[in-house]
Structure formats: C-alpha cells, structure tokens
Length: 336
Image (tube, rainbow, N blue to C red):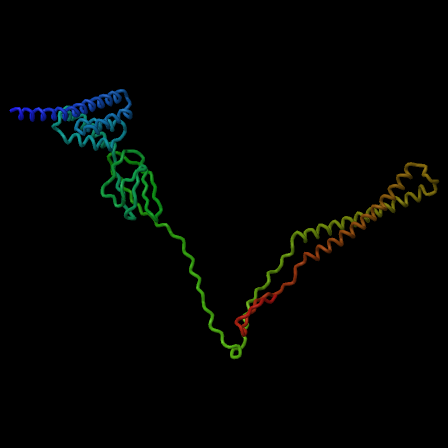
C-alpha cells in the first residue's frame, strides 16, 4: 500500500510541475494580448503588433492567431492578416472564435480586398524573382504572389542576362500578370589567334636566282612648319614697314634741309632764332632716323628670307625595304 501511495504522489507532483509553466505561459499570453489591445485602442497599431506576435509565438492557439490577424490588418499588412484570420476561422468550435466569428470574418473580407495577386512568367528558367527587396522564388513560379494593394518593385535577374526592374501598381482583389524575357549579355569578341606561316626551305644559291622583295613606302610629304612660315611673313612685313619709314623720314629730312638752307644758312652761329634751331634739329633727327629705318628694313628682309628658306617643303623621296636570299639566308636592308 505504501508503495502505491508513493507512486501516486510522484505522478501528482509531475502533473503539477508540468502544468505550472503552462499556467505561467497562459498568463503571459493574456498579458501580452491585453497590452497589445491597449495600444490598438490608443491608435498606435504599429507598436502594438510585436505584443501579438510574441503571444502567438508562446501559444499558437485560435485566439492568438485571430488576434495577430486583426493586429496585422490594423498595422497595414493585409497579406499576413488574411493568412492568420483564415487559419483562426478554421477552428469554428473554439470559444474565442465562436464569440468573435463575425468580427474575424469581416476583417478577413477587408484584408482580401486590400490584397492583389501577381503571376510572373518568362525566360530564362531559374531567374530569381525579387519583390520589394525580398527573394520570393525563381522562374517559373508555381503560384501567384499575394501582395498588398500598393506600388510594388519587381526585379527579375539571372547570371549572364540583363536585369528587368519594374514598378507595378497592385490593385486589391485583382490578379496581375508580368511576362519577362531577359536578354543575354553579349560577350566581347575574342581576337583571332595569329596565324604563323612557315617560310619554304631555301634552295641553293647557285640553283636559284636571287629574288628581291621590295616593299615601297612613299615618304609622307613633310608639312612645312606653320610657325616658321608665319614668322617669315611677319618679319617680311616688318622689313617693308621699316624701309617705308626710312623713305618717309628721308623726305622729311630733305624738306627740313631745304627750309633751313633758305632761311637760316646765312645767319651766324650759334643760330639767332629758336625757329632755326628747331628746323636744324628736325633735319638732323629725320636724317639719322631714315638711316636707322633702312638698316632695320634690310636686317628684317634678310631674316625673312632665311625663315622662308628653312620652312620650305623638302623634296619627296621614296623609301623602300629590300630583301634577297643569300648564302647564309635572307638578307634585308632599307633604301632611303
């Protein structure tokens, strides 16, 4: 009898030990749901969502599933909300579902009205499909993608192909279709391998007459240096100006000389009038300046001639390269 009582006691202790964490989890779950509902009623569904997610992780019951679906719909996640609300309504006999069936059913209808579907097909097979930055599968996708009714970025990519990136407006309650055909990326053409042709064996010099291979390259006509030719023209112009100035000054000197001889030559030195002094000075200055003009003009003319000579185009010549077989092989030399 005492042994039977001992066994029953241990069994009861085990049941109590196992039920204690369950009761603690249930209390924590209810506390999380209560906190989440408080935040939802305060108009902050976003901060409330993590509390319902934690409660769902601790105990995946019809009650926590339905509460999570309602919170996701309020926070703007209709796709996830429709999934969890559908799962909760699949337990029609659960007391929490019986009590709130109509609320959950209306929420499911709203979630589905805010959800659209997108089918993606095309080439190449195995191309990766990315929706809003998340990989959802590869082509061909077996099922349509359920998406919230908003603008959605769709990227399809595959190695060796150009990427397809589009923004598709998803409408609630509608199915959309996207056909893609990624073009291949052309690889750059590889250069053809160099072909080396072996030269035929040379015959004896005594038996084969010498053959000359001549490849002429006409020498490119030399273009006269534009700088030197321009300088020659400029210096030549300067020579003309200098000689012209010499002629003008010489004429002015003759005029002043005649004027001085007619009016002032008979006067004693030093000259008595300022006008005679000025005429004499102008005569001497013009005479000296005309000589300087002639000398400068001559020097500039010589310089211009030298520049023209050095900038002339050289005579064209033909350069060629000549090869001929000899006693020790083929010999080549250039002729310029």
